[in-house]
Length: 239
Ligand SMILES: Nc1ncnc2c1ncn2[C@@H]1O[C@H](COP(=O)(O)OP(=O)(O)OP(=O)(O)O)[C@@H](O)[C@H]1O
Ligand SMILES: [Mg+2]
Image (cartoon, rainbow, N blue to C red):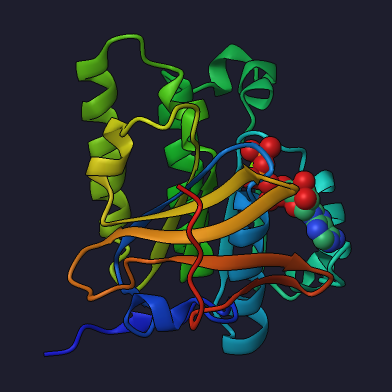
């Protein structure tokens, strides 16, 4: 039986991943600074809400929500109106917010506070797309690798329970080496932003997508005034 898919809403992407993201899947969106991770995630949520009427939840652990609305408005996307219509929720879960809480309002840890807030809001709005930007802020809470792996696995398991939805975990790629996070999720999409002879080159790579026949090429990606565009017909080489 063919698995049910959720369309990304990003031009050119669904063709690379067998027609969309498998329902219930958790995908890492990985890349270096400025590679387009935040725009990618915002675009998927906004398109999902606008075109398909699917509610989206964006949990920001790094950027101020107001800055995200500004990022979006630079592409002509009006987040406020989607928020007012209840189709998009921006959850401010930056660590500073946790530490501002009075001790009696605080959960036992930052990690459980983040997850509690995401779970409650995702259930309330029946979110079809859930984004956490970024996973690194959660990972940074654990010094011990075993604890860290256990916690990230439990987070992914909990996200799998939203079996009608998809989750995107933004991941700030610090080194070119493989990391534990990439082994744990169902999918890994890498946004490359690489210096070439006369500037920078953007490309997208589907590193893995479980239960899916996917492209193994690097495809050109552009950030235009209308957002991210991917050319599934072309491939680039830069190594
Ligand atoms: N309106 C726009 N039009 C064209 N390109 C844009 C526009 N807004 C942003 N960009 C490009 O996108 C880049 C930022 O993308 P984004 O914020 O998604 O990166 P990121 O991978 O989330 O970075 P970080 O790891 O620093 O959070 C900018 O540096 C710029 O090159
Ligand atoms: Mg970002």
